[in-house]
Length: 334
Ligand code: KG4
Ligand code: ZN
Image (cartoon, rainbow, N blue to C red; front, side, top):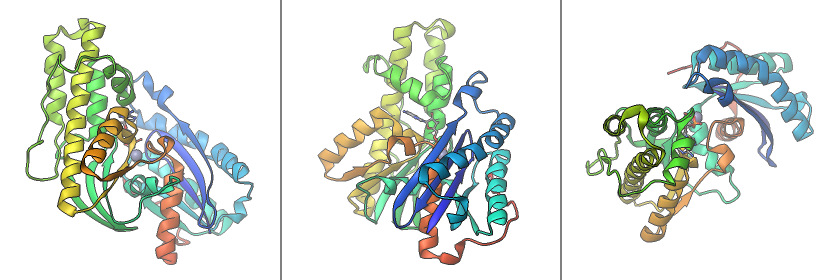
């Protein structure tokens, strides 16, 4: 069965074809980062318009890459939410229009399920069950995953998501958008002893997170250091203090979740999963505590169509009736 995946929840247009027999056939992505950069964040209206411009050329590119015709597609999976309403509507209308034109069934996919299953696209995928840490721009959650569709929420952020904390702190340091990669690069040059920032909820007895206090701590440090006049080395030191704090909390909660569930496999998904300091700290903890950690391929950490095609194929393998010839544009932004 060949499933087309369409992702358009935020600022990436992703199309992909996944074959349940042969694996990922091809995928194509357009990132709008350069377009939103000058505004310091995603402008929803611009995002929707750009998805419209990019979707069909990317679809053609994906079909050519897979050497198949549109008629060979068996089902179409699209990101139904959460995300920006207008952006989601573009993906959903593309999927439904194609479905109607080709007489193929469509199914909506939860964006986070796409992220959650993305490590299974890797060459050495984890077996179920595992603990998953989902760290994206909008979410921070720890889950127990027993199979496709069998997810138990173990803990989540009470306020900002981890990616949001990265982006907002980067903004306070005058770094560009998206801030995650920028603050991470800068932190490499920072002195870890210069700023000891708070580790919110590190010792709470649950698996929840809170990052808004950390962001406020960055704001206070930036103000005290002279706001706009912070020198480059001091910026790097603050970046380092921030990254060390957030990584400490994320790693500690993952270790606690593995202990609570008695599981030995940890899966990392979502954009912050691309972070090199987080990966290094998790790998060190894994060696120390004897668990195994799995990551998606770097290109599938951030938003992409492959994870949506794959999640669609997995959903259909457990419930072939999940895709329907119903073409109402049905999105769930929240
Ligand atoms: O999963 P994703 O592409 O989109 C959402 O579903 O939110 O995640 C985007 C988030 C942004 O906050 C971005 O700053 C963060 O992931 N991110 C990173 C890195 N690469 C992306 N954060 C830290 N280090 C990175 N290398
Ligand atoms: Zn995402």
